[in-house]
Length: 92
Image (cartoon, rainbow, N blue to C red):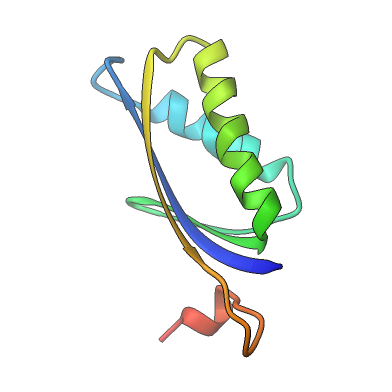
């Protein structure tokens, strides 16, 4: 099933800047066959629902393995039965 999502990953308890952790999130996402759009508060993702859910777990496992102590993620998902959801279809 195709889906679109917005993912926001928030490292807690690290330095003031979280640039390194967020850059790593983008690297992990780019290793997969997603359509991505990054923005100031997160990343829009287009792909298979199962892959999107799986990548959130992989991101948490990767960042924890690399030293992040605490992570909070917000994930908004959209699936549809009347047509395939796309990021392009969301643009105004």
